[in-house]
Length: 180
Image (cartoon, rainbow, N blue to C red):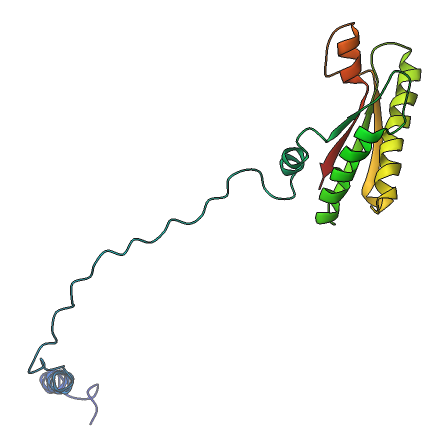
């Protein structure tokens, strides 16, 4: 006889009996309290954990790191109408090459600049010769030429405004800028 075919009162009794049997079965599985409780945890002393070290300064390998490492040697300066590398320029370019060799995945652009005197075309050509001279020197120190590009801004991006020798001297330059 199944519960479905049984009389409603019988089905109710069978259902109640099944429910009671299930409850008794489950109550037998209940955990009993242990005879003795474990001891409480021992008091802990506060241990000071050092704070994680914070990196101060620029990210290694970044343009900011390059500029900070060069301490002003990211730029070389030229005499009027010149693009030759002198001893001071050679020292700056050597420092640049050492930094670039430390980061072999880094590329750089060398920007050539001129002062305001002369025509736009002349200054663009002079800026290109200055950037190329710096690039060639870096390549002679062992850098892969494929990592270096040049661009000339001529007299279009002066760092010093003024029509005097001090301003012109600051604008006759080649600047190395690292790129990703």
